[in-house]
Image (cartoon, rainbow, N blue to C red; front, side, top):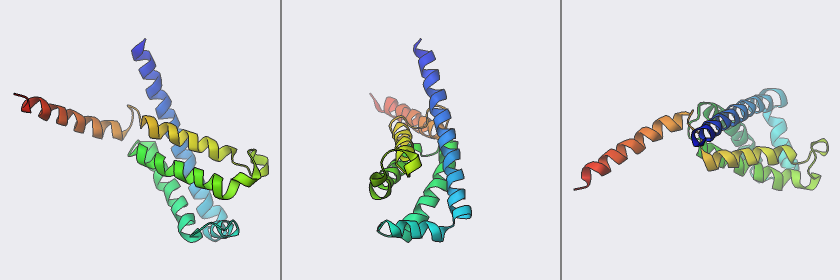
Length: 151
């Protein structure tokens, strides 16, 4: 039973990573090509967000590069931490006054994205990601060294 639950956890983390990563890349593409960076910067300026130029470009780069990294399962906790911070700041600076519901430009979607980021920050990439390959090998090498050093 324990191995079945572990299998389901791995599949769940994989599906969350793939879906969130793909949505982030699509969102970045939409903001960059369809909406335009000038419009993004103006939107942030209208809400009196500090450093709107830097944050608009930073958000698009985070979503594009971070989305690809999530799809491949590379540095997932780091990407998730940045994504969680982005969603919290978006809620606080822009969406809070609008309430929860998306038809009022509320923060429902940002809350869900932030919670998915928190999930990935907490549990990492799972077994089916580059993090598992890279850090498992590193952990196994450290364990072998520790075993050899014990008298």
